[in-house]
Every structure is written in structure tokens, then in C-alpha cells.
Length: 338
Image (cartoon, rainbow, N blue to C red; front, side):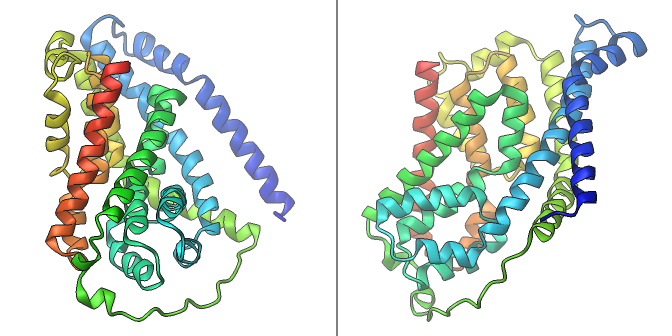
């Protein structure tokens, strides 16, 4: 149980957070129109309001959700995840792996040891790749930004389509039986049983949540500011007709072009999603910007370079190609129905 002092401090912090979040728009309008005397219907006024409103809103949401996810992640260590996935059938394992990828710590630098651990403990290749797709694609930063900027429907859409791509891509690659394109030294590695894990108590879990806030928010806040600044410029100054002509529903080629543009990019979700919001506000189609965002987050050249240590180039090409096709299908689908 948590000490009473921590409970009181947490309740006061939550109350302050809620008060700031609920009154943020009123405070921002007062600063923009009364203090700075900027007309709301002018490009500069729109851009400044966008920046001053979205920056604290996104940071408030990030702190809350990153803390919660940091606590949740204390229940899902990489070793425990390997044990859960080992021996599962491909389809069942793919669904479970994609869901676990959301809450299990993963980044490009941990791709190699995780992949080796999965393969050597009997996790099928397709299941492993479902995990490796969903973990970076569906991350708490992207989810918070989408929820804060677009609402719960778009956030749920992002999670649902991301899971579908991860499950579908892993299943397809599993059906192709491409295990011979794993590097030989990985397949020859011996499985080593993990040491017994300690179960932290609740004060320790809370400390982990605080550490996650310091680590993640401390790293991404410059990207938040940069992305929102770019988005503010687009929101205030880019003509709607121009953006609609490039990324609108009528431009059928915009979805594959967005994916091709996003794959070689290596950008933080915190810097991409505010730009996505501004593009949508200027007439870009939801499916197109969603495809662009997913390709930037899920597919990157640095990840391919790191995965090259354990996968042969042919399998990396198939991996990127299948995921890219899944992302394009999502883009075309939502451009057609929304």
C-alpha cells in the first residue's frame, strides 16, 4: 500500500492537473487576445493561439499517461513477455504479441536482444515481428498526442489500425516461412532461462512511473515544441486549397507518396503529430496523414540498420514491404469511408 503522504500528494497533483486542463482554452484566449492583443481571425493570432494552447495541453496529457504507462510496464518485463509468447500458435500469438507490444518497453536499441530472446525461446517468427511492429508503432506519446489533438475516436482508430497492421503483417510473414533469412548465429544460439524476477511493491511501481515521466517527457519536450511550432505555422499561414490539392481524397497517389516519404524519415512522434493536426485542419485527408504518421513511427532506416544484425537483407525488405502495404491499405480505407 502507498503511504498516506503519497496518496495526499497524488490527489492534490491530480486536482491541479484537472483544473489546468479544463481551463486551458480560456486562459490561452485571454493571453492571446487580451495580453498580446492579437486578432483571433488573423494568421498570426491563429498561429500563436495554436502554439500557446496545444503546448501545455500536450505536455499535461503526456505527464499523466506516461506516468500511468510507466506503472503498468512494471507488470510486463521483457523476460515475462518472452515466457507469455513462447509456444503460442501463430494467430493467437500474433494477437497477444501485438497487444503486449503496446505496454512492453521497446526501442530500436533493444531490438536485437529482444529478437534473440524471442527466437531462442520458441516464439515463431511471425509472432515476434507482430511484437516488433506494434511496440514502436503504438506508443504512449503518439496516443496521448492524438487523443489531445483529435479526440478519443481518432486515438482509438490509431490503436485499432496499428494492431491490425501488426497482426496482419506478422501473420503474412509467418505464412511465408522465412526463418531461413534469420542470421545463422541467431538460430544457433542457445536459450538461456531468465533469472527469477522480483515483484516490486506499489511505492516502487509509483517511483517507476515518476522515472518514466522524467525520462520520456524529459526527452520529447523539445520535439513537442518543434512539432507544435511547425503546426502553428501551417495552421496560420498555409492555404487550405493548396494542402487539399496535395493530400486530399481526390489525389489517389497521395497515400503511397506519404508512405514513401515517411519510410526514410526518422522523427519522433511528438514532432510529427502536431504537424498532422495542422495538415488535417487545412484539408488533408485523414487516411493520407494517418499513413504518413504510421510510416514515420513504425518504419525507419536506423531500425533497419540495427535489425540487420539479426535478419538477412531479404527478410528486412519483406518486413518493411508488408508493413508499408498494410499502412497504405489503412490510408486508402479511411480516405474512402471518412
